[in-house]
Image (cartoon, rainbow, N blue to C red; front, side):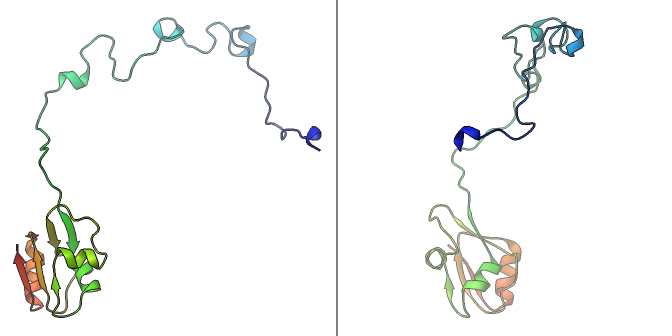
Length: 146
């Protein structure tokens, strides 16, 4: 029955013939607008081109730099610690990786104070936020900076 297949109704449209009179709706300029560079074939203007005027991105001054030695910290919140660890345990980078809280081993570990810990923990990390230290100490734990 492959010889009887037909496209759905309305799927096949007649090819528009540009430049064949004003009655077609695409006569005279053939849908290209007025005259000039944009009306010519191959006449494309790159984004940001301002007609020969100095472009905006070149008029504005350059500022700052990107530090190529910057290392992004691995972030852990107190919510994650309360979910994975039990009372009196020691939390460090290896323990977090083994329990699936962290994936990568590179970069310093930073503990943030999102959430609460209701039991004492010994947390060893390179960096702590202020609220994280307060909440760990309030629960009877220790926040050690390595």
